[in-house]
Amino acid sequence: NTYAPTENKEQEKIKVESIDTIVTMHGDKPYYENKYREVGDKCYHIGYSSYYLDVALEYRKKYFEVVERESDWIPCSERIPEEPKENPVFDGKCLEVYLVTTKYGSSDQDKVYPFRAFWNGINFTDGCRILDVIAWMPLPEPYKEKTE
Image 1 (cartoon, helix red, strand yellow):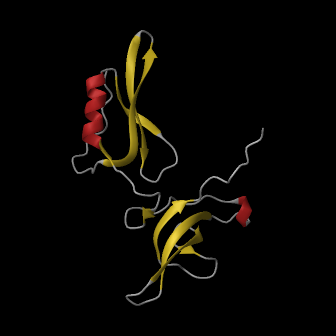
Image 2 (cartoon, one colour; image 1 turned 180 degrees about the vertical axis):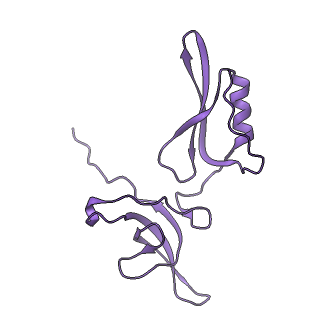
Image 3 (cartoon, helix red, strand yellow; image 1 turned 135 degrees about the vertical axis):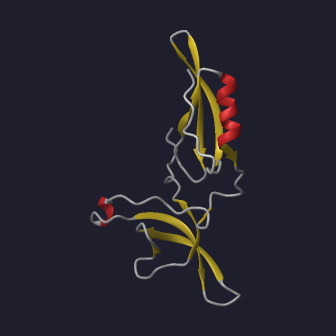
């Protein structure tokens, strides 16, 4: 059996940072699954699968575009963060913290600054005002010292 994705002729290819075809055994039959990470995501997805390798590889060509990123910055014109969930750190408010690059000023000589900002699902804010954010990224994992 082949489990084809729902056909959508107007669908753009999914932009991914990486994609691998993995094989697992179902009884004595190999099953081929595409494991991919969409641009800007921290997690991987698995899908576009088949019992036939040629079909799974065809799905890769048809539905995915591998995008080489120069950095981890995600332009707001490309996508914005997902809806935040309630966060106990912020008294249960729906906020997430991101590193952002924002324009500051209203002339041709806008200053560009990277700093930490809050995302409330609609706007980026510094806690007092709405920011003109041009790109964002998730905060990196905290540094952990090596123990010997």
